[in-house]
Length: 533
Image (tube, rainbow, N blue to C red; front, side, top):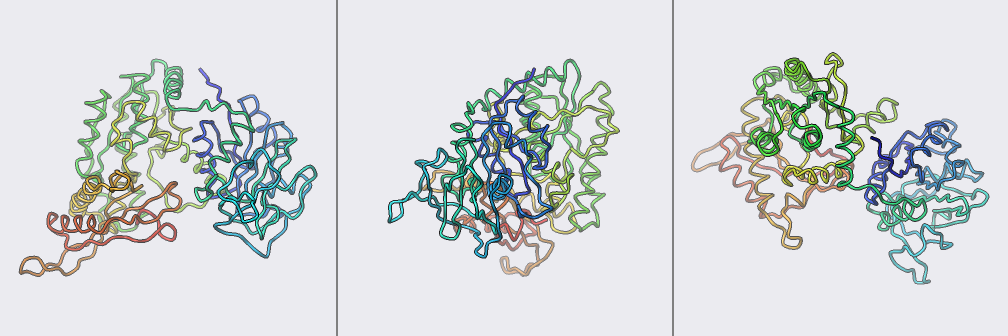
């Protein structure tokens, strides 16, 4: 069974925020895919047979006029669908269709106010305020050093700023539009409305992408793919693998067996919660393997973060392989791979992405398992996975849990991992999360857990002097970390109430013997990362 969705093709030229374009398009109820900007003409034409309705060209750090820069495939401008160029996408469109792009002495990075011109279909009626002269103005985000200095034949100016005369252009006869600013980032106030207008009104997409329908489609697709075969899934307890397990189980029931490997670096009572939800609540067959001694033994004396990740990844493979060997009738390996994993993996293979750190994922399992691969979530973004989890009946507290790294507390214990450190951290972290859940922000009516995107505690392998009762202590330090973000590419530290921080600090110091000092991390990303290792 193959469901044909109308689709938007997004060609990626190396922007750090290309995924945000896709998320905005999906939010508009339209299916889209990201592919490298150097696909060939045949690929673009083939997309027509798969329901192609429009194309978006992403930004880039490169210059469109540079000889080595990627060129937009000629077919993009020949297949007869609307095209939207963003930043580099605009400049490439201008260059390749007969316009001119030059280096600008006045670069624009950050907030800008754009005036719309010409009442084009894309921008007509969209504005954030009026200028004193009565012009409709947009609050947008710019990030460019080059600019279009001469329009291609057939194009009109669509937008401008004082320092960028051509901040947008359009050839409405052909359905070609281009913007120098970034509608995909939240700083562009009308960005979602603009992209929605492009994909629904200009491209004519029918908004046929939604989670309830997706469940039906995915179940049918899994049944067709698997037939009567048996499937193994490595269950981490995180959102992705849990939703994948629930979806596959809905499709094929007891043909699925999950293997849950406890590496001894989980949060407090996490193993019990996973087993309660997946096995007892949903009726999914789960094999629980307690391999904590094996993992902690291999980590002894290892302080380097990357080395710790590799050890945890390698041991996971060994344990999983040993358990899989017992399930002799299994023919498929299921993974909770999601769309950002697919995009990032493709980018790393082409050498167009820079790795900040490696990630432990079941995707590293070896070919020696001789199993076919089942990845039912590989076309979904994280927020779509969460909505799918709710549609499948998973409890909201599991679906909306904050992200937790594959190596678990192994990368939240700085330096060497020891059982003592893990036990202290588990208890301190549980207090922090509990108080975040229990503290309601009056204005929104939401808990501070829901108001933060990721919150956790970090164990610091240093001791500080303290005073408890009449005695002097010399105990460990922990750091609290809480951030707010819409995309995890950038993040601000959460301005938690002092009363909440005070309560958390007091409880940790009083209830967790061995910790006598609590700090709060007030660094943003960038320059820091969200996790410490």
